[in-house]
Image (cartoon, rainbow, N blue to C red; front, side):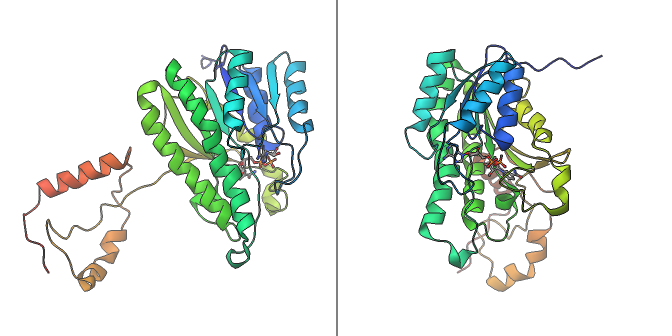
Length: 311
Ligand code: NAI
């Protein structure tokens, strides 16, 4: 029996950076499946310079020619008012905002000593502040309606690190923190928030992928993102890798660690002696939030000897 089709009838999506690359794939597929889409794109260069209405307009036209509905937004997500404008457009034109895919991005790669203040600001402004700018007004609108889906575009450059990308890596890891907290704050309003770490050949990566390039089409990332954006997906607070046809989960895990005892302060030497236990990954835990870690610490202490703090 075929799986139930995943549709977006009656849903409204904002996709940032949807004028090309991955964002375009997301916007086209959401529209094909019935969503009405705000196609946001500044239409600039990979480093964030310049701008043009062409990129967003072309995707809106492509959606319209396939019988879908979309509207263009040319705002820079780095503009603090851009999100409010996009949400207003979504509500005025289509009645609501149900989905936000924070995908807009630029690169200013340079080794750490060579990163200028401007390189850092430009990248943080687009990726991290941009996601705040767009998500905050959308979250407010979603909360009122009791439904929402957020997808944040992170990167293995942040999750794992990559030479020359301190600005980009920091921004991309910042998005994980933003999504984790949105998942927690949005839980009781039917709002889910997840992160994607894509690998795809786009103008951003065409010179970086080497022999992988021919195997990593942006369309292969799309199903993961469209699933996360759907009502069928109740997952939240998670991170997924998608690329080259391989879909997998990234996670932040905590090792069981070494417990020195309640009210006990071990010496530095004692700690050093246990460093292998502290690092051992067997039996790790994945927590749903900071509260769960504190709860587990409480449980550990409740079962422990009540010693005294050594001076
Ligand atoms: P891309 O360069 O093709 O697409 C990015 C889009 O964002 C462009 O159309 C650009 O005009 C738009 N944009 C840039 N600044 C903007 C702003 N201030 N406001 C609105 N739109 C803006 O690159 P790609 O590869 O499609 O990237 C999409 C996202 O995925 C980015 O966030 C990128 O960092 C992330 N990513 C991509 C990977 C890949 O392998 N392609 C790997 C890891 C992350």
